Amino acid sequence: MATGRGDGTGRPETPPRGILGWLLFDCATQPFFTLVTTFVFAPYFVAAVAPDPVSGQAWWGYATGAAGLLIALTAPLAGAVADAAGPRKPFVIGFGLMMALAASALWWTAPGTPHAVAIALVAFAVGTVGVEYATVFNNAMMPDLVPPERLGRLSGRGWAIGYVGGLVSLAATLALMAASPETGRTLAGLDPILGLDPATRAGDRASGPFSALWFCLFILPFVLWTPDRPRSGRPLGAAVRGAAGTLRGTLAELGHHPAAARFLIANMIYTDGLIALFAFGGVYAAGAFGWTTVEIGVFGILLTVTGTIGALAGGRLDDRLGPKAVVTGSLALLTLAALGILGTTRDTVLFVLPAAGPVPGDGLWASLPEKVYVALGCLIGLAAGPVQAASRTLLCRLAPPDRTAQFFGLFALTGKITSFMGPIMVGLATDLSGSQRLGVAPLVAFFVVGAVLLAGVRTPR
Image (cartoon, rainbow, N blue to C red; front, side):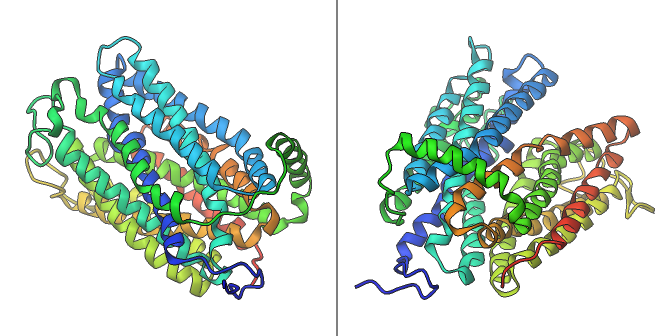
């Protein structure tokens, strides 16, 4: 006989394996973000598939923007449908498989092959839509799995396990699959496994199918063990029609939920800054210090490790201090990191202190400015995990219980609809000042304004 959770809902306690299945969702999807979006396939597309790097970067940006716009405009409605229909797992599984199929298609993008550019851009955009939708519905399951006082730890552990998944998949790809076309060797000095041909960049292209296989493996515990809401009994068509009306009502009544509305605006602003910080971190290092792919790849692994630590620690602090305090503290750390980057150049640290810059052949991160930049990157990693994990916990506390998926759809909307603003502001500041260093200045404003808006959010005890 199931016993109540003791949180006033009367729902049975979620078994540990059900919690584990939910946690492994982040692990299942993270390789798509780590391998395809950031460190492996995206640089390969720009360098080897597109006719030139400028066109490649522009086209990749357009595909990212198109996917983000579609998600922003439709995710709230999709969340409303899930709330009306009841179960969330079918949506998580369906959209996750959509991502896996799209990622698998990236294999057919060898340099010089017909339609490789179109296949890469369409598959990436479709995969992005799939993984973001799946995340919306997975997030909406949180309040049904644990009582409110354990939401922070649940969210933090999910982000941490996701970081571990990204770290392991990145290390495996760099060490075993992705090889240099010049040497034919991987980062570990090995021949690529499975006969992957370095001349056709097969190891880079394999990052897509590898992400798909990884998802199919690690989503199985979620499919088999994680409990879900019962069906509402309404046909899907009726649920869609009812969801559209409910969503209109939610948007109209958002003024009656001032704390949630203010938080969503704050999240929109500081998320823009975070997106830009990650997007330009490697670009700044390559331009300011001349870092190569190896140095940037190792830097990415280091950020993933610190992100894992930060997410775990942030989850515990979330349950102890509350998610608002964790987000605020994380934004303070991100502001300090942005200021530190602003004050670090090839031959300067802390704005005015001279330092010897890097020279060719001096080793990995040998100069003081490089060491300072790596330290700032670790600070960003420690803060980025908690700010993202605690943000979704805070929304769980602010959203009406019967509209959780809708509000997570709005959460996705605010995280995507202006996601172009951070990179555009950095680009404009860089262009107008003629300085990579001064181009980072707008990020400070994004974090400060987001923190100020968050300060006015009243949270339930």
